[in-house]
Amino acid sequence: MNFSDRHDIDAPIEAVFAKLADLACFDAAARARGIDLRHLSGPVQPGPGSAWVIGVPLRGRRVDVEVSVVDTVPPHQVMLSGFAEGMACLAHLELTALAAGRTRMTAQVELRPRTVGARLLVRSAVLARRRLTAGFGRILAELARETEALCRRSGG
Image 1 (cartoon, rainbow, N blue to C red):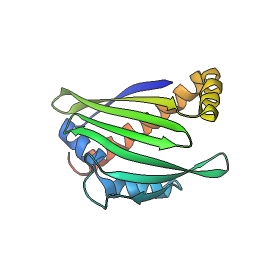
Image 2 (image 1 turned 90 degrees about the horizontal axis):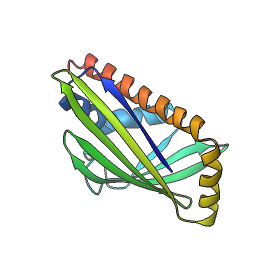
Image 3 (image 1 turned 60 degrees about the vertical axis):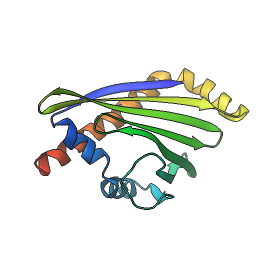
Image 4 (image 1 turned 45 degrees about the vertical axis):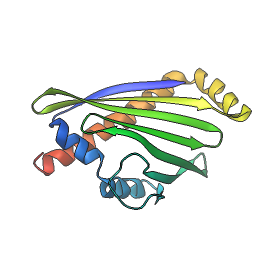
């Protein structure tokens, strides 16, 4: 199952990438939303090999998601892989400079079930695809707004 969306940000591509790679900022934002983050690779700048375990509240219980950085091409793209409860995930975040002070952020996420239970979950999710796609778009739009605000505050 695949999801994709894109949003434009009024900030230069270098500033957007720097804000997206700011681990302290993501830690604070995650904790404010009730998400528990543990760095497996130490608190360093994200790059290939960086890894986290993210505890996400989902339907009244906590789900641990293992996430690692597969590849980065500053300031243009980041690829992440994740695994949780029989579901593998590959996320690709791409930044494209539209103009000197404008950047397009495109995100693609592919979910791959690895167990029978995960296959059933994906099958049922196909029925709710429109709602899930809209939710993915809202999350990406919020990330774009927050990144733009951070770039504006820091003069980027």
